[in-house]
Length: 592
View 1 (cartoon, rainbow, N blue to C red):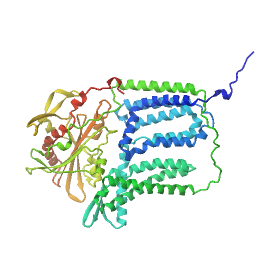
View 2: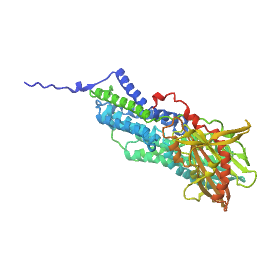
View 3: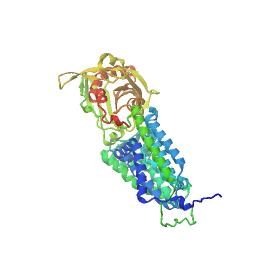
View 4: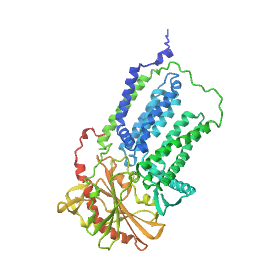
């Protein structure tokens, strides 16, 4: 005789207590944070340090949670049926994050790592909630993943330059329409007012990029909650772009008008306050667009809320096995990730390297060169530059045989990504025309003949060059280690359309973790590979101007003696990489 056993639907349902739910969720959360600590810590730190640009990323998780709360009746209408497919996505997300963190340098990027973290979040939700609940959960999860992470400058730079141009052209047209005499040079507006020229620099902070990102996040949230059809929601999200651009142009016009009364109104804290004030009318403009879209059609169907009865979190009993599997997958991934970081000697977080002394202590008088002017940037320009550690100074040859040299040095450390400002972009934005098709690397090998070799310290098998400089305080010569690598200067020539008879020559290079690198791409390979516990880079830029006969050869004839005098003094301010790399790692046993 055969006996059949039937399991009722009630027996398949598991309703955990509040304490059990908190314990299970806390366990998964702790392992998740442990696994992705390097990414999460960097993201939160960057959002706090750059609140004007990315402070909204700290609010996004709460908005996503609010979306889930709004749909709680639909999500909990039936017991949640876990999906093993979610575990597969979790595994793939962990592997992706590991590849981006420990793999080839080209993949070691904050947003590429964020894709792995996002996949794990999506997989976890699918694992515990199942496909049926994901009909209501997918949007909050995607919203969280997309808008809660900082977008790297490497990506934004492709858009920011175009937005600066739009803001500049729009500002020029707007100021002209209200009666101002204005001329545009690159990304700078020159207002002619009361026989004075008032420059309004449309810096990257004025491009409207931060407003655009914030409006996209706001638009998606408002479309999801305030509109019923997908075509309405899509239009509202797309309208975030022209709304942000239009309001940013109005902000530029406002700054231009105020600058005619006091030029300080277009810079510093007041400049930032004007941007915040314009967010208020921008929000109401956006509300008006949503109101129009909502009333384009009248939907008289009854879409009332579901009856809100006593809601209870219920699972299919398979959730217990799925929970164990999820904890095992995340735990194994965490341990394997840490062991991989140790085996590959990868540091998941680089530590900042402070300057040995201020760049302002670079001597104003070196050999025949004398300083005639130090350029001080306002708060807006410093924000655009990305660092407060800089030196911009003009030197002239007291013997009168060489052209004046404008020296610009900018020091960066503890960065989320390497995207240095270079003349290729900055001078073009200032209205200059590039005469050389592409930057070229020009050797300045004459410097090597003036330097010796360090008899004890090497970098990747190459001795550090040593330069001797006079110390006015000590009254004696001191030895300074110079960067290792071929001394190449990245060179470009520019033409000022306002003075076509003049030529401007710009050369620059970088010192990154003790190495000489001529191009921005070399900075990432030198300082952001994960192989060093510390990371820094310093841009050295030298610009000279002359008439049409002042060509590249004449520029380098002036550059070589100037660089041989000034570079050792700059290196005295930078950290000695032999000392930095020799510092013991207090967490060597727990690297990663």
